[in-house]
Length: 136
Image (cartoon, rainbow, N blue to C red):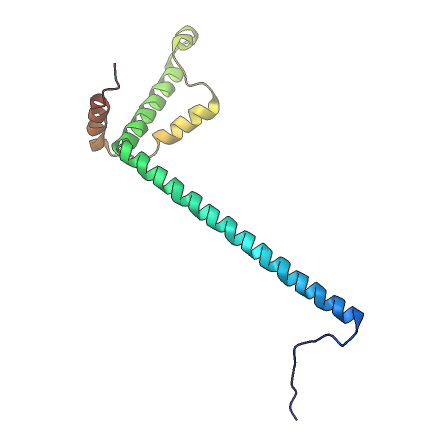
């Protein structure tokens, strides 16, 4: 004895069966439309990622990587000077000392200063800045 399973078909003239078939058809159509929308959103995100990658490449081409080392070195130096001033200066001298405004900014500067850098690149970064013609 074998059992044959067939796809469900609405009974001829049965209104509830026809409604069930219509509902299943509508759900399939909605699901397809939702998938198309999701695919469209994914493609838009992929295009945006490609655009951002291109902008990053252009920025990297415009500013040499040595500049990151220089920024990290300067942040580290500023943090060291800042800590020294707060430990060793009295109130009046401290009032004349230029500060980075805001605790969050100071913490960010300290975090940047703790990032590793290659000291051998600092000279090239300084030379690049001096040769750009933008200094006065």
